Image 1 (cartoon, helix red, strand yellow):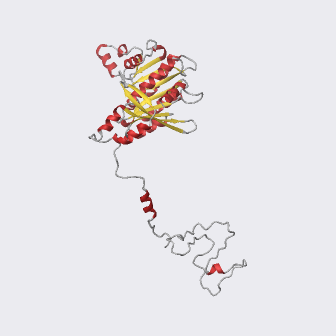
Image 2 (spheres, rainbow, N blue to C red; image 1 turned 60 degrees about the vertical axis):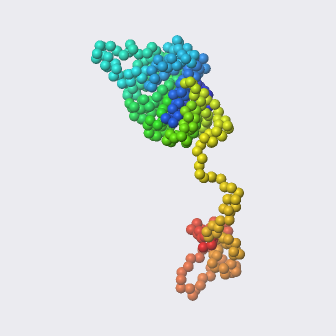
Image 3 (cartoon, rainbow, N blue to C red; image 1 turned 30 degrees about the vertical axis):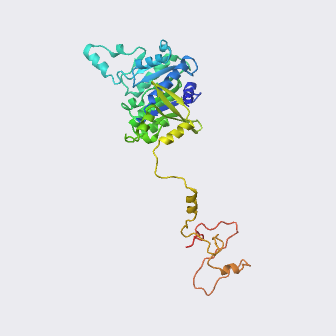
Length: 376
């Protein structure tokens, strides 16, 4: 399933459509979202270098880590960082996001923080300005792929850091503009869902064509107090979890897939969920004091229960009113109607309403709803 996400990001956008967008969300119960983010980053980088991707470049917007961290990460994964100037650009929003350090250096000795910025990274000094941030991303991407119709992809390592300085509407506008730009092939970002309100997560998911959720392997350990009974659950969730992905199709259909991940030495591996794991997971769940299934004896006892007002076979015929005749007036059944002439009781001093059905196919009156099937 993780491979399906990599293929979607690799294949990019179709002609005349928005770029595929992926939201990676995690929580404190399973904080492995950054592992998934770096996994997709390295996979996409390998595809770009091998010319297997629609995009020919990558713009990485670094909020939570320094540019040197990502360059070292790519180097450890065996990706050619020496040629990084040709296919990758890093927008450094980590070193001085508000420009305070640069202003301090300028006031002290007239220096600039630009000289201290990491090699191959462009420094962003005002992350509050979404228009300027958008322009910087697009300019860096065009600097990689040049002019024409060649596309590049965008990766944002933390949407939460942007939300610290801008409103959700501004951030949504930034992501929407990036998706609709004809030079962007694909875009993905990381979000810690428990750091903001549910409506923020809903907005981010609405703007995404794919949503990847990292969840603990056993939901019962989420939010519970740490005690001796929950320790096995917590230990089980520490290095394993569930990876749920929701794909939204162009025709409105939604496809949901799920698999298991395992973290070892800062690396994340994915595998399908086996039946043995399902049995183990159910055995780890705490036992409840009730059963939703009925035994054979319980089913027999339930069938013997007498429901109130239900006909119990007392010998009387069960007559259901169908709207054609009156059950209380038994003599009307013995008096055939041979003519269509209405006969009224001239001696009667009370008024009455007589209604003749046009045909037997006419449905009963909707306002007639007697409880003929009940013993009332």
